[in-house]
Length: 373
Image 1 (tube, one colour):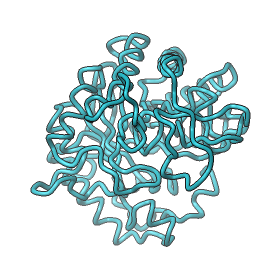
Image 2 (cartoon, one colour):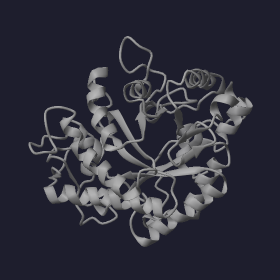
Image 3 (cartoon, one colour):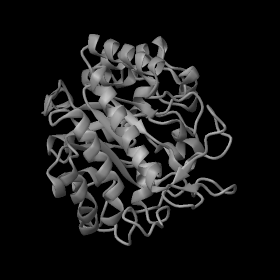
Image 4 (cartoon, one colour):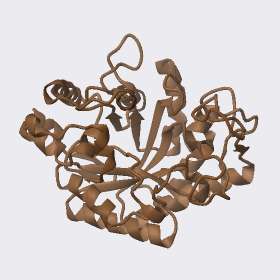
């Protein structure tokens, strides 16, 4: 069963995958001057060589105002795009497919942050982001800011297709810019891009998705990552019931999303009471679109707990989550499974799982973050 499920082919539009495993996007901060170099290309290639069917890159910033962390790669500018072209070539040589995750941090960015301290951050409203305890309020985006940001994302999507990526992912999760428009705590706008309902607050994303579609055409896959939890508020909820989730998802489907990447801390936890379905399972049931599930695959703890109380994962315990994953893949609860920390620690993780070599897996520890293995 392991081999059949993890290596079962998948296809949508122009994308054909040899298996069901996706490398989850993880910020690594290994791109000096915001340019992904040969080391980054080799890092992704190693996963493609070991049965990772689709790689979703770390978040890549679409505009200078979108940075909030050091050494994060740009997705604009000749040198950065040339670096990404090299990454694509290495992944394709190994037989893998790859999406860039297009990202803007929004109001997580504060005054003085690199790479250009003179560029301020902004968000849907002049509200301090919950991940920031004190400081100056971000600037509320004007109509021109919104138009320019939609243009920045759509240009990045065009460049992704031009240099050979197999699709794109829009980062609409974890309390960053697109998600800040979704979330009532960070979107207090009274114009077209605000509103009292979750459907109202999807309008920025809807306009952005439609602009991206115009740039990439009908056959190029668009994936949207979304989450309930947010940076600084892990109990946040965009949707508290399946009906609210349907209200949120329907405008996004109509705008042109092909795949939903449903970010949760633990893939094995039900999203709503009364059913075992996780967030990805509910999203697939509501939309009938392909979905990616994610969250603590092969791990004993979620990534937040790891930061609080680091512990190396024990193979005999992490095998339990893998068995549960295979059962849910077999039921087609979700279509693809994204794996983060397990793959970060061991580029051969998928191959070892397929072969049943659990004892050979290199476990994730916090020290795994210190290298680009």
